[in-house]
Length: 396
Image (cartoon, rainbow, N blue to C red; front, side, top):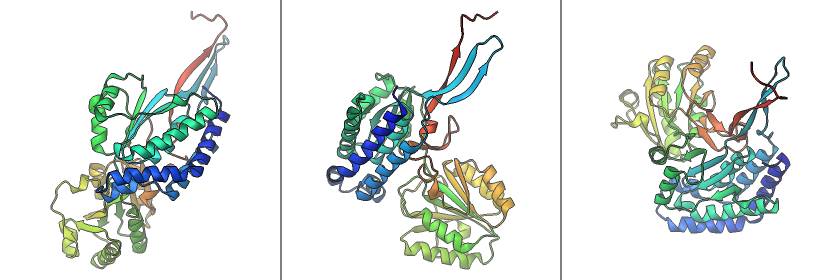
């Protein structure tokens, strides 16, 4: 255990090193991208580490350093009549293993979040980002050593698939919690090979519902923003439109024009195709459950707000959902009943992010209900312990 000042000093030193050594990081990232020239657009977007992304990582470190220390916070205090003093305080989980795919920024941002909460961190990134991750992990070690902290407090695991499987099955490193960050395949792999507790960073597949009483220009703006980055989990995949929306065919045409201009491929259900035949009817029955991670959007109709709520709860990933409406009562019903980690009225799902929510860098966006939901910052990466102080007390 070390002090808040030490934690913050290390985070700030690391931010400086990122900026000073950006050329080395970009060169390492170039080797990664050259090794996988045929990667799809969404993977390339997640993998690419340029000056802008490095600046963002450095800023996230400074944000985490500025946050209160989540460790050692008194949650409850009680002194009995006999003088026995009881406190419940926050403590680190212990050792957290973060397994992730092609996002080198996780090596900085997720690790920083867990580190601020006092946890030891094991990092296992994807092979496609190996050179970048090793470069970033080396900067972590430098910052730790300079503050006289064990450089293994944050460890990058350069392991094969089989070695990773063996680690999480046998738990040879005494891991207390695993956070898998990636697609359903990665999450399934971890679930099937370990008995260690998991904190799931779930998939997106986010929905927007356009109510019959809405500002249609706002709908278009929010939908376009929802597709401004297609490779992220807070991107928009589905749009449901109230079938009683006035001039629905004409409005579909304006939305379609805006999406086509941005290179978004649009399909829809049978009702949408009838209303605006230029939208191709989708024949894949499973489309409502799919997270696209691509320039693709699916549009369907809903009979009313309740129908939209039921559709979202049946098919979404439980990540984010939005309603665009001028009716406060409908917005309240939607936001209370939709079973997602973040719900929005008249705003883009792209805001579901630790930095945007003011918690600094996030370790994940949890879609499970225990132990926390949504962007997980340092404040959520602690558990609790009871501290009891007596003077020879015995129970009668």
